[in-house]
Length: 180
Image (cartoon, rainbow, N blue to C red):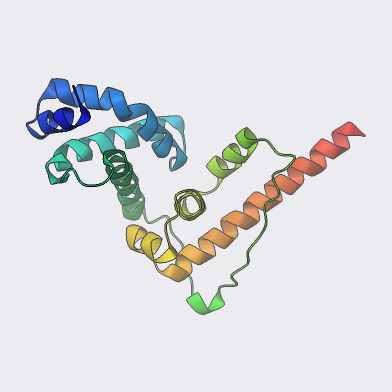
């Protein structure tokens, strides 16, 4: 069955087709969910909520553009909706923001370590960092998604970068001292 046929059957609430769609995209969407979640269990919950939303809104998909991109956007928006309702963001004065661009040198640091550092960031920093750096959203788009100001997104991004830099420096310093 083609993807187009599968989508058509899902629009008709065919549970077998929904199950097949879930099997086809759950692992990719789980990695998206994991990126924005505190834990594996929370990522599973977020994925479940995302698929509920996907099946509820699938009739809105008009077969234009990437279906996988549409699924990813629904997943991210579903997760962001949860965080908006939890009010995890610190509102800041936009004039007080120093827009630092901090380089994170990852030459001697493994990808797994970097991903763990990102995962360990507080929610407000992790969400903005992932949306801006990893998924390419603008500060304006992030602000709209999370119902915060662009100043808050910039502040949270700067703080996330600073925390990541501190963790990497500490890791490298610890690594060098173990070699001595």
